[in-house]
Image (cartoon, rainbow, N blue to C red):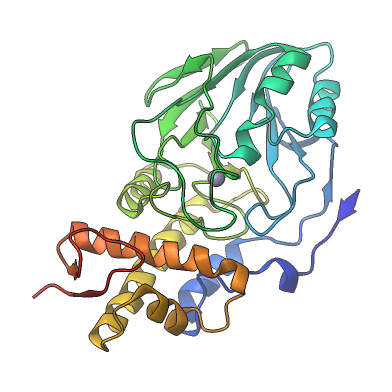
Length: 327
Ligand SMILES: [Zn+2]
């Protein structure tokens, strides 16, 4: 099935605002949302990398989850995607006659990890991801609850930052990049200046950072880490190839800094509760995305509180607290 979305349909009001004009433009320009997708068809997207898109389009997944097949003969699959039999069968068909060494999972959100055991049943291979974290998981908003996360997801092999996955013909460096999720990994294709960025940096929109699942301080630190690298290609889990990685990461960082400034401006005007801030900043937002917008604001307020720039009525940041600048 071919799907070519209209940009109006997939561009959420979420995290966009008139004042962002310049920054949003720079981020906007780098996103190519006019992708043509053939679900279930493996397409060579970079030398030695094939991509199959799962048919799970949605407000958080764009056209669907990208599953990547890395290598030839002996391969690794990055993000098996949802437990969709047709998708898993398509991956199995694409690698028929090849050996699947690893099923790598960027993070335990269901649109990335749910298909792992099913693909293993079809093709073998060891499932590898960060594994359980000791942090609180989940987010209390529709679409971002445990329907969205599999807190019990356990790999065969737990990966840690700095480790390398070696397969015949290529190697992947493991980069722990928490922020969107505490267990989020990116995988760098050694010698190719290419990174599989998962949901940390996406090809179609800014990333959701929703506490407690998401953590803004960690997200910003993980973005800074990508800035220090000199990659020439990002292959995200949603959306197309990112051929200007540094520019997109910079736009992501600027976008968050701008959002933080707009929140501080609200506090200066005496707008100190999250619902009021959301109403001010996200005006005509779709009702379905309001919960996500509230959590995004909460993530920023947590980060401001960590730096003692903002104080809350309670001792901790919460959706129902009121906030003011620290004196
Ligand atoms: Zn995710």
